[in-house]
Length: 179
Image (tube, rainbow, N blue to C red; front, side):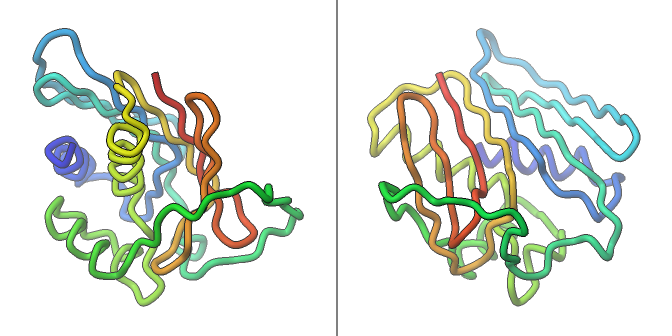
C-alpha cells in the first residue's frame, strides 16, 4: 500500500498544499497496471492511480489556509457515541512521523504539535485490522473521513458486517466499508 501512497503524494505534488482527504477507495485489480489521473472540479480533486495489482482513488478538498485543522474541536451538533464501541488504536507522534517520512508526505498538518493523522495511515491500519484481526479477505475498501483524527486520540470502533464506524471523544471520524 505504501507504494500507492507515495504515488499519490507524487501525483498531487503540484496541487494546493491546503488539501485534505475526504475519501479513499482502494481495490485489487484483475491484472497489473500502472497509471495515474488527476481531475478537478472547483475545490474538489480526484486522483486515481494504479501500481501493480492495486488501485487507489483519493477524493481531496482544497481548504482555505485558515480552515486547516489545527486541533480537535467539539462537534457543534451533538453526536451520540454508541455504548458498544471498542477501543481500537491511538496514533502516536512517532507512528505518524515514521509514516509521513516513508511516503514523503510533507503536508504540515501531519507535522504540527497536534498532528492530524494521515488518511492513508488510517486506511492502512484499517486494512491490517480487517485482514489480520478479523481474518477477512479484502478486494475493495472505502473510507469516508468525516472529521480529522489527531495524534494521541483514542479511536474507538463499531464493526458490523462489512462496515466500521470510527469515533474519537465526541466525534464520528470515519466510515469504512469493504468487500
